[in-house]
Image 1 (tube, helix red, strand yellow):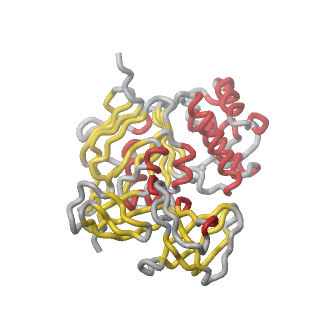
Image 2 (cartoon, rainbow, N blue to C red):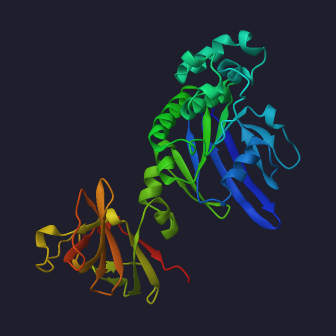
Length: 361
């Protein structure tokens, strides 16, 4: 018998003042899986979470937990009966309660009756030594760990997380995220995480659902989403991009780097060839000596440096291309800061380029 998803939502819709904030969203999350709803602010991520949690009501669609209907437009289990935990940016710990009492808040019987469960969870999040402390005595990272323990105490089948780490500093954030994932997976909890940060989604998620204007536009493993974006906007959401504009003639498109094969695209179609800066290579071996094509990289193209910046682990160099005057950016490891006006030859990884129809103005 096939195991049903721990969480499944089917065709959820929500309108506010005639505007579709969530528009036909469907997805499923298996036990122990982390799925990330990723997208810009206002795309419908948090509204989707609120409907699943039961604090907002969908206009249409269904929510299922472990193969059982939780909510449609007629039947509705209240939030406290859904076995769904919540974690938000605001830790919302009770300041007058100890760590133990905060963790015990969602359990029946109080601290004494649930001491074993409280100690088990605080041990998992490395907070057992603070069991008798109060929230004001803890750092932000420690409060986040207590909030996680409290959310897990009643053994929810599903955990909803809305930007839960955004209040932490960058160095602490990675440690807390990794520890949180370890604890959630050990509990077999299905996790639906909302974030607008691609790096967080890539680090945490088993699957990413990319949202835009209320719709999921692409779903898949982080590697696949990053390396096979559905459109230019999807590619640009994960990193800076270069865009080379062209027009198809005879299944070929002229670019500064030679002709690109664009089979199946009608003649006259305007296209965008997208490549990330880390895949635009400066040809140091032939710098200033003219093109020497290779099968993989195609034709080198000459550009003149207009700006260079050191970013820490790498440098970003901007070029104005001789071919058409366009600006392209190259990401170079370590320190490389050529002077403005320096002419260099550039190569591209053709296997790392994406070709999309040109966007309407």
